[in-house]
Image 1: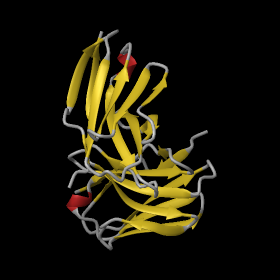
Image 2: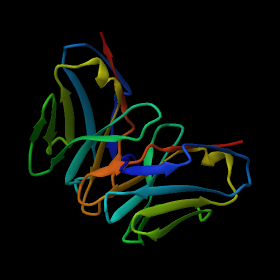
Image 3: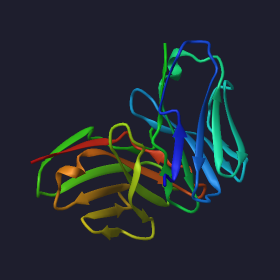
Length: 110
Length: 111
């Protein structure tokens, strides 16, 4: 019984395409996040949602749009993909303090 | 502006010995610190944390030390085991649960 799950695990696509990554948590947590780990291994927050409301939006291009249909889901939609979007994207959730991460989605833009 | 720094990108330690991973931070507002462990192709997993009101927290083989005046924390693993080989990330936050991560240290335990 996975706590934070993401699909797909790997995503290879061409520049200019639009793609989505799905995330679900079955922990009953109120807060969900998207983090990005780039080629230099920096792990940085992109978005944070609390009870379906956007709380944190770090300087992320408008091409990235998170959507939270309910408390247990936070999907990430990316428009007009660029080469620089290639990275590993981690979904995470938390209640108080400890943040739990999903397994990651490796996105490769060619 | 890297607010959380792990200056050693890699560390090799003999099995059975102590592994010491270091982390420095610049933002004095941080009040909660965490260590995460990451295996290849997996998400980071929580290891141990410490609040800024403490200077030490211990959980089995893992101990985290916090020196607020030096803005420094360290993770001690003793005894080190082969399964401890992974990338270790230090992270910090204050209030809003937005974690700021260091760049990670790859720990290799030599059998």
